[in-house]
Image 1 (cartoon, rainbow, N blue to C red):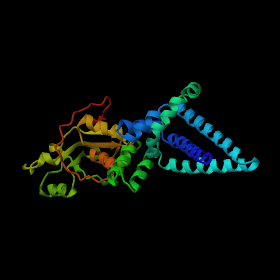
Image 2 (image 1 turned 180 degrees about the vertical axis):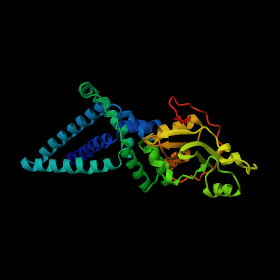
Image 3 (image 1 turned 120 degrees about the horizontal axis):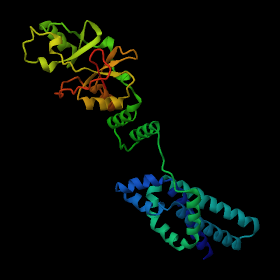
Length: 335
């Protein structure tokens, strides 16, 4: 009978010890979030885990009571140092190491199975544990949720994508990481530099060779300059010349005159908002001396999020809405 009781107490000791580590290895905020999303296991655990200090007191008091009783029983069966060594070995191996190793690896699954069991002990030990837990609540406060930096979030995303049971695929990983690093980049990082920009002179006739050049450039929007390449005066949209006899037209005559300028250090999130506000899909980027540095399109911004190249294809933009600048020498519109 004594041996059966000792074995039972060892099981209880292991359960309380394992549950203590298992429950508190689960972040309360994460459990609440999972419970709100419909996770049944998280809901069961959160019902007891939400009262963190009361749960902690209950598990520790119960575990101490079990281990003390176990030591007394072994002391009655054995003598002196042998009783101490036996009690210590049994509690450490079967009451601590094995259950904690098991419960920590399967905290959510095992914890949900034992939630009802813990609630019973919380009820019976409430008169003892409630005052202690209230003191802890008052002086230690509630548990703080885990706040992750952007780099930590990106690392977590990588770990999910590399896991055996993939929740996030490679494309989703690129989009999520692109969105997280989005605001850290500026227009200068993604613009097409001046040396690579295809441009037309204001007086350039739109003859057959020019139209072929526009077609071969692969762009649906071409900046138009007047006299100096720093003086961008318009944007030629290929849609505006489709189906027209352009032999007597020039680039300057066809180009739309609403040109928007942005500083090279403009953050991408602000840049994206500017694209939405102006309903324009191409901005001219200026350097610190207000000189033409390159161009940036809304496709460039979206590519930073999705992590893939988007073909330059006209999609019927709305007519841009002009935002006059307070200071302008060339009728500039800055956003």
